[in-house]
Amino acid sequence: MIDSNRRDRTGRHVTLRPVDDHNWRAVADVVPRDDQRAWVYPMAARYLLLSERGGVWTSLAVYAGDAVVGHVMWGVDDDGSRWIGGVVVDATEQGHGVGEAAVATLATWLAAQPGCRAVRLSYHPDNAAAATLWTRLGFLPTGATEDDEVVAELPVDHGVDG
Image 1 (cartoon, one colour):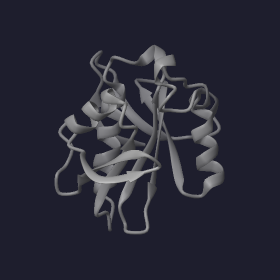
Image 2 (cartoon, helix red, strand yellow):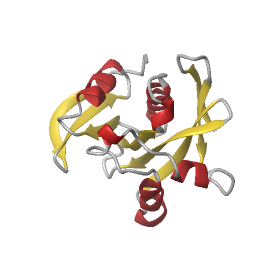
Image 3 (cartoon, rainbow, N blue to C red):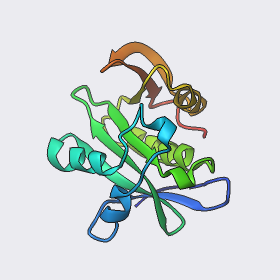
Image 4 (spheres, helix red, strand yellow):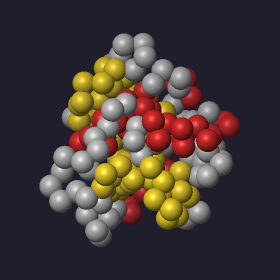
């Protein structure tokens, strides 16, 4: 379990846990709001398959209290930087700060890993809500793009305040 002792705005303890035989179905069933489907896959099951078959990503279940409420994944780039991807909070759970707590928790954990130079993520330039959230957490655009998305970076010496 990855735990930085963060809570969502309703007071639930947000943790990240490995996807396993007990929770994978709940993670697979996580769906974003309809208006977010231009930027994320319509079900977290796609991200689970990328982790299982792609060899790059590691999926994690996002828990609020004892309930699976989302998905996030991470990977390591050739230069030692860590990447965060596949951030999906179930539509019914949005608006409570779960996504912010999950990304802050993962970014803090990744930044502490040996050899980590930076923590990066990318987002679609039209996704203003994501840009605002990532900036609030200390991620800054690098000027680079990845698959037509803005790359943002959190230097490891910065930490996450979120």
